Amino acid sequence: KKLFARKQRKQRNAKKLQRKNKRKSLRFPKPPAAARGDHLWHYERFPPTGPNGKMVDPEEAKLNLALEAVKEDILSTNKQINDERRWVIAVSKIIKSYNTKMQRVEAHIIALRKEMKSLYRKKKQIENLKLQRALQAKLKEAHAELKTLKNSLSHVARKQGELNKSGRDLRATIFGIRSQL
Image 1: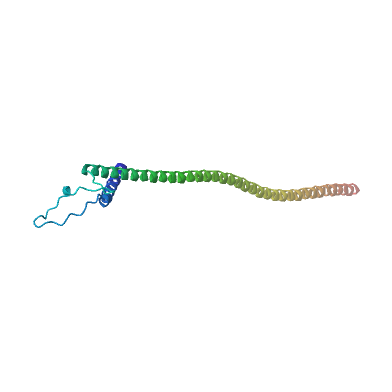
Image 2: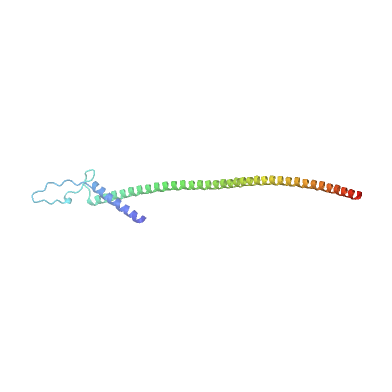
């Protein structure tokens, strides 16, 4: 495709040069008015003149035209090279800016991942703190229940002691009544 496009550009440039050269071609003097019967005019009767008015050989005129065409080709090729060089420079700048942007984005992604890890750590810490507080509340409740149970056990032990004492007293009283009877 590139070769085909290049070939087309060369053909277009060649056509432009041909049109340009037609406009710049050597100026031939106007033919004299034709005599009666002599209505034919031939360019060889009046040789072409150059820019300074001197006569120019037709072969040299062709060479001059070819030289001008080659000069135009050189100029157009040089312009094309400069345009393509500018394009390459512009594209390389764009690529460079995208590469730096990619590096910055990758660095930002890494920073965001680190931030996300710290956020997960904070989340875990908060969840652990909530769990710890819930466990502390349960522990407090369990301590309260244990205290209640201990109080109940001590109360039961006291009552048992009282009952044992009253039982002993009752036995002693019964034994005393039996012995009196």
